[in-house]
Image (cartoon, rainbow, N blue to C red):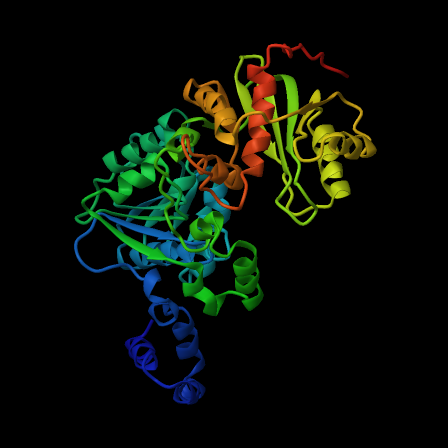
Length: 444
């Protein structure tokens, strides 16, 4: 970019809109093209790197804040100013690193100006800039791939999403740090939506880390108005909205039966043992306009470990609608039994479910103890390592973390309907002696 274009970009920042438009009309085509890629002109404050001496720049913000664009522009600036830069691009997986960090709408290829775009070599997992800088893609799910290579800088995307099973996320980070020994001023940019996982807590406690926090709202100028309105209407100040839109790191509630650290320790990316028995737990709403209908699918594996497979819960449904949702879940997961709480509806629950043509065995259960009392032995199963979550279930997990051992429910919504459904399913699989597992035969 020419010095003239650069100075005009800085000048434009302080101009009223009409004067800015008039000046743009007087600029030449090359100056306009240069101005379009002048990141400091278009970025909002939270997308620009902080000054001072730091090792880690952590952008902890809601979805749509512009974290990916900020990371890509930071890498672009490094690569264009330092031909010797050797940059690690670390995503949750190689496919995500490629799809988001490199080829995405805000990725490195998209943000590069014409004539300065890096050459992408997928087979080598590398990007090469015309000046000589180089970036290499890595998967945080393969920590050993970061053992050995050396870098001067790194951009780590969605660090709170990295696989925590077996300490992989922490191992990947440690191997990256140990290889950050090129150049005179090694630095890391880490971009993520917050989740209370061990790696993120470690970064927040790091003495050489600078944290940028922000909400989705900060980038509203670059987001469709309908998106902002829909997200506010759907999530508002709910727990999920506070995390995913406001960028708030949700802390554990004192006395909760489940903690976020416990749930992360129980997580696996996919089911690791074949199922011998599958149960759908159902917590029906008291009325059509009331709470959600909790519908959670769990399975007992051949290894004796129970797994949460799916959260199929639906909000404010009619009896027919929630019954059909239960039927779809049972069919999709080839369930052996549906377990439904019948306190609020008695025989009506059975009638509604059978009207939805659920042919598998149905067991109605009646709650004789408080919700937390029923949940305590299930929470103990988690502590003992006998339950795992096969994937992410944010709304269900928010409810679990709101169940207090000696007190009222403190999670999102009026009632822990999803958590109740999970408790019934796991009671049936692991704590009900009258329902021993059976071996299911492979078909076909």
